[in-house]
Amino acid sequence: MAKYQIVAFLLLLSFALTFAAENNLACQYRFNATKEVESLKVYAQSTGAFITDSIRYENSTGYNTVTLKFYNDYDVPLTIRVIFDFSARWMVGGWGTETHDSAITIAPRDTQKIVEGRAVNEMYLNMDTLRIIFQNNNDTYARYIKENITEEVCTQCGEAVCLNDGYLCNNSLECGGGFCIRGRCSHDKNCYMNDCQCGDNALQCRNDSCVPKRTISVGQKTSCNMDEECITGLSQNNICIKSEIQKQEEEEAAKQELQRKKDAEEKEAQVRQSAEALAKQKQEAENIRVFIEQAVSLLKYIFIGLFILLTITIVMYLYYRRLENAKKAAAKRKREEEENRRREAEEKRQDDERRRHQNERRSRRSESAADDPYTKACETLDVDQDAGYEECKKKWLNWQRIYHRDTMPKSDPEAKNQAEEQLKKINSAWELIKDTRGWS
Image (cartoon, rainbow, N blue to C red; front, side, top):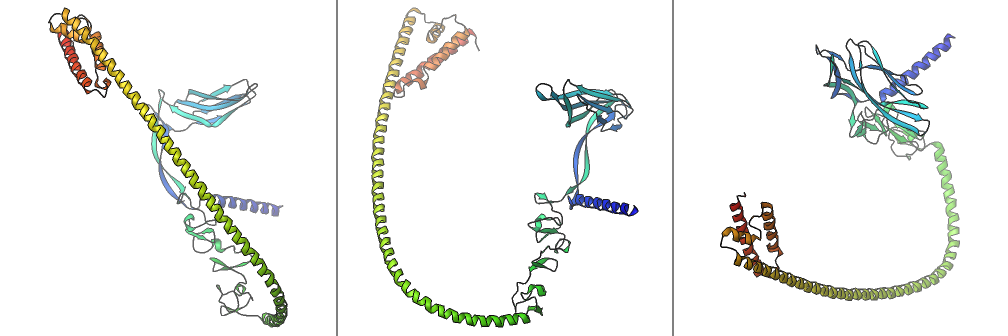
C-alpha cells in the first residue's frame, strides 16, 4: 500500500512541476515596469485617516431573486453606490435585462442586502457589470488617489511579446534569448536544450546544425567528421572513402556497362535505318506545314487590312458627328445670346417706365408742395411727413434695392449713372429726415 502511495505522490509532484513550468514559460523574459493608477479610497471625516479601498460582499442569487450581501468590517458607517445588470427569463416574452442603481449606508460592523425579485422562471446576475462606488457621508469621505505601482511585464520584441526558449521562430529578433537556431528560440548559439531535432535522415553537428546522412560522395570532405555523412558510410582523415563491397560493385558495373555499349551499338544500327525512312516522311510533313503557314500569314494580312479600313471608317464617322454637334452647340449659343439681348431690352424698357412714373409723381408733388427741405426730403423718399421710423427706413431700403447698380442693365452705362445719382438724392433725403426727426 505504501508503494502505491509513493507512486501517486510522485505523479502528483510531476504534474505540479509541469504546470508551474508551463506557467513560467508563458512569459519567460520579463522586466519590472512602473505605471500610475487611480483608485477610490475612503477616509475618516474627523481625522482624515485612511479606512479602506474595498468592501467585502457575497452573491447569493436564487431561483427568482438576485441578492447581494455587503459586509462593513470597520468601525465607521460606509456609504456605497451599487450598479449592476441582471437578466430574467419571463414566462411570456423570453429573456430581458434590467439595470439596478442604488445607494446604501452600512452601519459599523454590520451587513446589508440588496435584493431584486421578479415573478419569473429564472434570474441571474451579470458579475462583469457590477460596480461599487464609495460615497461621502457624515463620518467618511471618498477620494480618488493616484499611485505608482510596479508590476512585472513581458519583454517586447518589436510589436509582439518575445518568444520563450524552445518556441518556434522565424528569425532571432522574435526571441527573448536573442537566437533563433533551426526554427526554435535559444539563449545561445546552440540548439535549444542541445537538441536540434534533426530527425532520422540527418545528423546533429556541434549542437547548432544538422547535416544529411549518406550524401557526400567519395573523395569529398565531410562537414562534421562523421562516417554517416558519406554515401559509403566510411571516412578517413575527414575524407569519404570507398568500401570493399563498393569496389566489387564498381567492377561488376563496369562489365555490365561494356555489355550495354555493345547492345546499344546494335540497336543504334537498327534505329539508323528506321530514321532514314522517317526522315522522308518528316520532309513531306514539313512541306505541308510551310504551305499552311504561308496561307495563314496571307489571311492575317487580309484581316489586318480589313481592320484598318474599319478603323478609318469609324474615325471619319466620329469626326463628322463631332462637327455636327459643334454646329448644334453654336446654334444653341446664338439662340441664348438673342434671348439675353431680348431680356436686357425688356429690363431697360421696364426701368424707363419706372423712372417715367416716378418723375411724373415727383413733378405732381413738386407743384403742390412748398420749398421746405423736409417736405422735399419726404417727397424724394415717397413717405408722408408724419410717417414713423420703421416705415421711412423700410421705404429707404426699398429704394436701395430698386436703384442698386446690379439691377441696372449691363449694356446701358447711362442707366447705371442715373441710378447712382438718384441713390445719392435718396440717401441725402434719408439723412435729413433722421436729423429733423431726431433719429439716430
